Length: 559
Image (tube, rainbow, N blue to C red; front, side):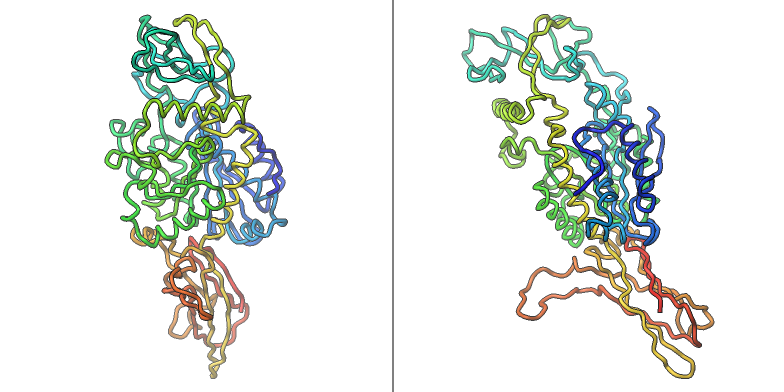
């Protein structure tokens, strides 16, 4: 779809602020934004609200939420968040789906949960988990990853040693193969990450603990464990200002019914739950969530799977405290983590659960060789052949390899647009699947004797039901559909102006089994539409029926 800005590079915070300000000025009826908090580095967490305010206020429409940069280096997700904002405002009035979406729904976008972290990642050679704040008080001694040769990239170092475990591949000087039993003569090497060594004793090279180890996606309340169980989880749940702001954002916007949280990498659409098997979750919820994820698979090519059953390898000591689980397990909101970019599959490397056991050293280097070959062919600007360098502690070494940040973790810049655009298309379809109230008809019947019956038919036009999920029902976060008539109480006969009609089901819950032989084989097992009636005394002008539900919106229709 058409955009105003280019998506051929990764944005610094200044550019994000500029684009957001531009959208707010150029599209005041469609776009607004606010600052959730100021970070320690004086950046802002920006929250954008995108809807057509001429068709109703944002908080009275069902809402879809997108965020990026929970992890600092996963900047592709931030770029998708910027792209979907751009597409929605630029294509409104030109694209039918986008126009319908903003007329009837709200889209909330938080481009970067960790603006400090992404800014540091993009302006230094450092890699980091969530944010550039020192985490471990005692990191030990050893090798600190650092750009030593001044090319602004941390690559690999190969160091010649008679005790090395690698040797050059005779077929390609850029590749290394494992030293075999009986290899007693020749050149052998050890391979380390590029960096400098603290307190080097002239022999031992060990890695220091990660400098910036805080992990926002282990800091949410549901399933939080302390540092001894999961490194980076923080001192207590929501101890980071960024995670606290995001958690409060979800609580303060009860119209949010679905959350897409953007990460990299792996090319996967992984859906909740992440703390227990899918079989233990409500079957109805898993049917709806897995169907939406599979639509994403068909539109993007990313594999769709449940987090716990497929993505987590250690079922006993898994990591948790994640944002997607927080949304589903505490609020009943459907949540998906999209892992952008799939270099390994482009190289022919299988998903880790597709091979029978953990790859050995030779297989690991076979995978590395495939990555190197792909990068050299498709992103040569991100490759460097082994080049001699005089290391201050190790002496003569060779530095080389690919730019991890923009080959493995994120796509090379020239592939960025296509990678994020296909997910934007998926998110638009998902947002259109939200529950949506409509009033099909409002009618009046003369009962005689100055009495009248007002009838309204209220329906849910969305793929998801108005209560959203069985999890929401269990938690008590679901709300009924309320239908009201704007008439004085003394004019009503044996009824109330506002009536609670409970839930409305959805076409997404119609059974898929059965056959079509000229008749509809399967209808909804629970009502999608309900009729509401009032008996009033006397004639009234300007009567309006209003139906409302936090997740399905507020709509009105005049008699």
